Image 1 (cartoon, rainbow, N blue to C red):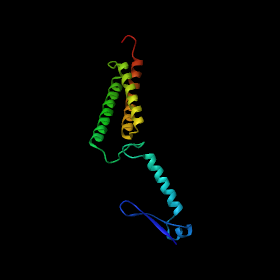
Image 2: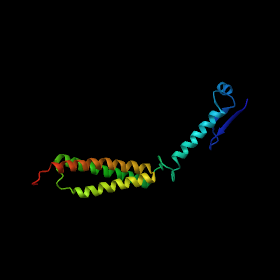
Image 3: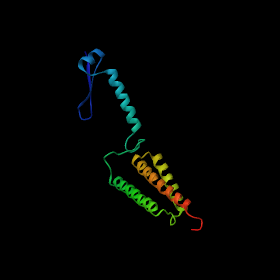
Image 4: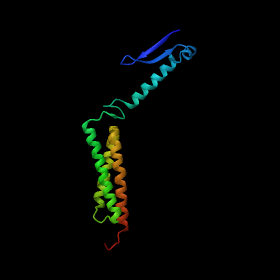
Length: 154
């Protein structure tokens, strides 16, 4: 009856495994084949997620830098500003003082920046820019709606 254990970096046992299914069932542990398959799947997941600097998702998790935090706060501020603009247009039922051409240019720029962030695979930037796209789409659509309702004389 052979038993192996895999130790983590800290020295703690991560996996106990036995040679046969019967031995594994008695000891209530994995077989070597089951443990090997889990290790292969974890390695595939690690390859998919990549490391913080170069991986496909490039997400730092809770270890945010000051720049990450300021970036997040900037996205929140931009979204709040756009929400106030949406509220103003809705309340006044007018987009008279807005340049639709300028809004179109900004909208195009917002999409180009989102595409760039997707190419960088930086999840926090993708999420932040995605939120800007959503709120700005609402803003732009509302401005277009009230522009279309504007009487030809005004």
